[in-house]
Image (cartoon, rainbow, N blue to C red; front, side, top):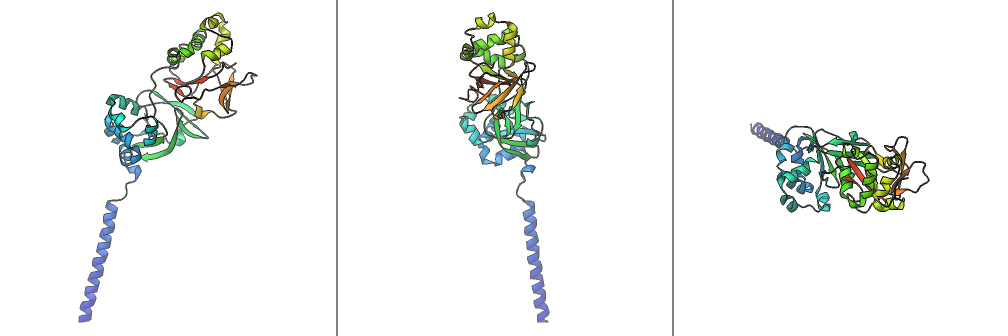
Length: 316
């Protein structure tokens, strides 16, 4: 009788231990580690401390609800190191008008899920802020406005995040307006007008312009806008047209020995990368070097309709 009682107690104890173990397992399943793909974009940013400045910007702009809602968007997300490199801290963010912060953030977002494998070699896409963002992909990686993607394809339940190395600032001027506003381009502006291209370079597009400074034109024998206006208009038009490519090409897209057609019929540019520069394919003239002093000031100058690179000589 005692044996039976002992065995019964042992059996009950084992059953209780088993029940405890299964309950513990059930508790673990009720609170699993969150899968990033099950989080919204807002939640991914909020939980990752490397996005604390971006998170502050989202809060300041009042966009947290929008980035938490169902949808299918792509966000090019600067991490803290990218913001700091641009001189932007959470304090700076909180000192800006919310509308300004929202304008910057909306320039980082596209209204479709775009995985890195679907980024084209060179093209533009409309952001949620309404401006064009210029994307490209090459052997060096994926880029937006010449800024590299450091971590691609972070999935969220309402889209995709690509972590980028810099902050994207929405452009406000066309290529023509940028040139007009810079006194170092006064001879180039005269040449563009003489060539009849002012309207084209003010219109929507994704152009790349290799822009010679006044000093570069001086070295080519054009000392003033008056010299341009005195020259044959077809000659001037041909010169200007071979400085323009009809797609976006940032410094990150330059590949040694590559060629790209210009908007001058039958003319292409051959790229050199040491130093970065271009020359008319087949021309005996020296390469026109891209002035790579300051990103966004001498090269990778983003306009609403393309990008400008300053070059040190006229492309002939």
